[in-house]
Image (cartoon, rainbow, N blue to C red; front, side, top):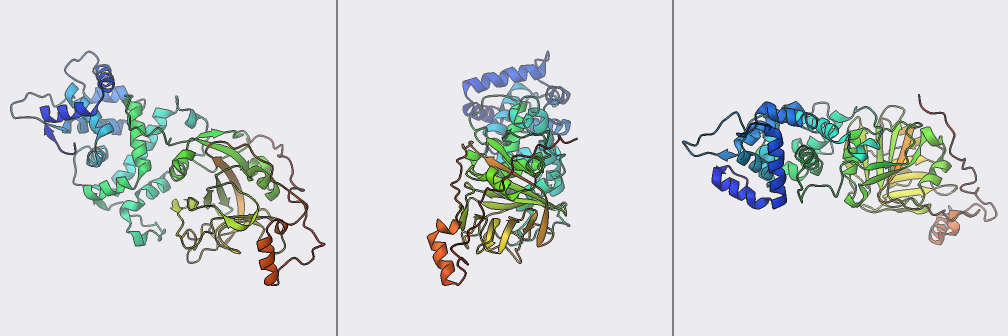
Amino acid sequence: MGNKSSSPEIYNESLKLLSTEERLMIKKIYTEICGNNKDGFSESDLVNYGKQSVTECLLRHLFFFMKSLIQYEPGQHVNDLLVNDEEFLVSLATIFKGVALDQVLLMTYLCVGEEADSVKCSQLRELIENLLVSYIKASNKKDTALSSWQFRPPELTNNFCEAVLWDLVSKDNDKVNLVRKNFPWNSKHDTAALEQWLFQCPVLLSLFKEVFHALFPISVDNVLHNAPLVPVAKDAPWNKIRTLLDLPAVLFLNQAIPSELRSKWHFLYHTHSHGESFSTMMTKILNRGPSILVVEDTEGHIFGGFASQSWTLNSQFMGSASCFLFQLSPVMNLYQPTGYNENYMYLNQGQNTMPNGLGMGGQLEYFGLWLDSEFGKGHSKAEPRCTTYNSPQLSKHETFEIKTLEIWSVGPELVQEQPEVTPGSILDKDVEAKAMLTMLNKGPVSEGLREEDVTGDSPEDHDLPPLS
C-alpha cells in the first residue's frame, strides 16, 4: 500500500491482505457502526461506537483518516459525511496490515486530523497521552494484566512521552545529555523522520495495535499479543505496599526486557512489606531468575536496574549484556551496556575483604548503582559516566539514602532453591578470589576467624498493618 490509489485498485489490494474470516468480521463491525443506515456511518456514529474504548479526539481524527485513503474518479458520487463499506475495509487493512508509511499517515491524521508534511513534538505528545488513556479505557474491564496491578497515580506520563520521543528529537551524540528542561516540544518532524522513529519505537507501535484491536476486534495475525504491553502482577500484597510504578513506567520497562519475560512479574520484595533488612531482601531474591529492582531515594529520584539472571552470592561480577540500568524520575531513560566491560551484576555479603552489598555496573567501590549491605545506604558513582552502562549519576547525590525499594522477578516463575549456606567465608568456595587477594596482601586476616552465617539474622516477613 503506502500511496493513495483509485477506488477499485486500493480496494482489491486491501482484499488480498485480509483473510475470509477477517473480511467477515470487518463487515460485521461495519454493520454495527452503521446501525440502520445502509449508506455508511458518520463521524458521530463512529464516536458513539468507540467512545467506551478510545478517546473522542482519536475517534474524530480517525474518521477523517478513513475518508482520505481512496482517490475517487471524477464524477463518482461519494458522500463526504459518511464512511462507506469499501472505505472502512481499506482503512482496517491499512491500520493492521499496512507498511511503515501507512502507519506514519495514520499517525499524522491522529495528531492533526488531516494529512500533513510534518508534525510537532507537542502534537505527538498529545497522541501518546490519548493512546495511553485509550489503552486503559479499552483494557480495564477485561484485561487481567491491568486489573492485577494497583498502580501509583500516573505521575510519570510526561517522562514517558519524553522518553518515547527522545530518539526523534536527539542526535546520537546528544542522547547522553539528559537535562531536558528545554525539551523541544515545538520542533517539527517530517514523514521520513517519523518513519525511522517508529522503527526504533516498538512501544508506540504496540500501543497502536492494542488500542485498534480493542476498537475493531478482528483476528489479525500480526497483532503483537505474544509480547504483552503490561505483565500480570503475581503475588503482590497490595494492602501492604504502594508500588513505585505507574502504568507508563511498567510499559517502559516491560518493553525493554526480553520478550519471553514480559507476560508475568512476580513480587519478591518491598520495604513496606518486608522491612528494611538486607538479609531479608537477599532471601527473597536469591535464585529467583531475572529481576527488576526499583529504588526511590529520599530526594524523590526513582531509578533501578534489570538483572538478566538470578542473583547469587559471588565475589565476582555476573550477568549478561541484556542487563541495563534505568531512571524513571525526574527523567525516564534506559542505559544499555557499552561493551567496555562485563561488570553487570554483583552481590556479596559478610566479607571483610570485598564490598558487601548489591551492585550493577562500574567497578568495585565505584558502582553505577550500589545498595550497601548496611541497609538504607547506596551510591551511584558515575562521573562522568558509568563505564558499563554509560549511565549518569542516577540519584540526586552521589551517595543516597533509600526511601523505598521494591523488586520483581520477571518471566516464568522459578521455584526458589535454597542457596548453600555454610558458616565459612564465600572465599572458601572461590579459590581464585582468595588466592588473588592473598597476593595483594588483602587476604583473610585469620583463617580461624569466620564471618557470621549469611542468613543468621534474616527475620521472617514483618507482619505490618495494612496501608491506610
